Length: 400
Image (cartoon, rainbow, N blue to C red):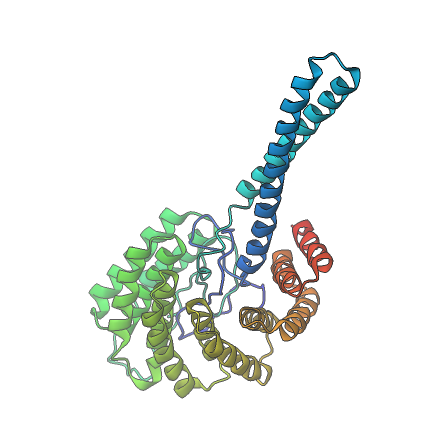
């Protein structure tokens, strides 16, 4: 997955790509930012444990210093100059400890990390487009007829195509209200002109559902994506990829809401269609298999996650079209499966490989390197290599 703009895939609606841990959103709205899986809960947990330990130590020292101060204060009443000096030193130590304790608590508040909670999946993006700020969605019915249709099949209304293009441009410009209005109008035009069961209506529903998903309006997203899958379920064999895309996106919606059993079932169904229609090395099949691995990872099925991501990596390496960005995604998340299974050596080696690949990718964003470095820090800390972990974390935090 490169960082260039969306490539037009004539007959395929956008598919979902998500990761094992949500990172802060860079767009105007959304449940998370698309891109590399951060999975920083392991590193954050270690940071919080260290901060909690510091706070307990400081509180203990502060209590002791206050006790010393009280004792010295009583003794100082004898006007002993030495005791007065000791009192001043004890009070200064109290002040220093209070300042250090306040700084530690401020750092805890700044981190605002909840390591005990399951990691989230990242925001969906079109599988044939790259993560970017703003809403990523495409209208992909750019021909007058879809494959297998004869001259009696109604053409896609030109006004609906124009509105879909307008929605795309508005979304890229951050005019989300205009984008939503254009998408809804295009959908209604297609319903009236083509009928509610036409696959182009299903794709329009999918696009609108992905728009709502990106905006964090999950209830509306679920309604649209469920309707899209239902509409596309009866698509002819040559058009089954549309159905798989809707199933894949619906799986992502369920996963974000931690309904992992439903997400797994939907994702497996989608993967089966992608593989049968286009082969296991097709970009959509690879993205869907990655998604399945991430569902396993987030639901705690670590052995399944590892095996699925390993297969995804092997298929990706043999794919006709090399995509370094996707390779980095797979490597990073495979490393997280290793980390959670306690396989620290393969975790470290996999993260180093991902980092080298990301640094050599001119289209990679700096935050991708930062994510990998934070995961590497977590791995090194678990291995008892605190100094190296701190160095990796410092390097990550220095990146924009």
